Image (tube, rainbow, N blue to C red):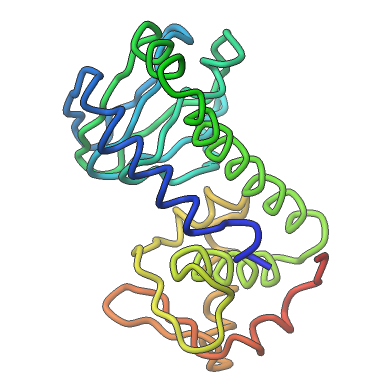
Length: 226
């Protein structure tokens, strides 16, 4: 399932192009941890070169919903750029990051030189759409344990580049709060769900990394929709 939705070959081609070819043509800036990046216009695309950012929405009362983790070679601002208007999402720097800010004139020149790179922008937008689609489906079709089960298998599959077959260590050290923000759950609900899965021997924790121990048993916790 995830291998078809998130082709790692296309992802590598995209991130390599953005980080190695397009990024040097922009203004490269460093951003400290906990910085909020909230562009005032839709005239730039941002390329993450190092560190890590989160992108999502924050309500007036401070509630957060994260949609995407952004790492090396991934971009943000591309949908605003092609649409021509800013939207309300914000980008939050979770690790000290270097980001290339590529202005409209540079982007237009690059696209004119090589129209094939439109595919990389389309790939980025499509990937984000698919991530949101799966999050919405999980929220509709699964209970809290099913949402976490689906998320862990998705994260592991995207990390490895194929649907999981066996024991897998999740490389990113997710906190319970981070998972809660990612999937629209409360932190106690996330903790309870992970404890349930750990008590059943489906996952374990090693050096703050979640380890998927039993793939097929975790799949049973989900209400399939594929």
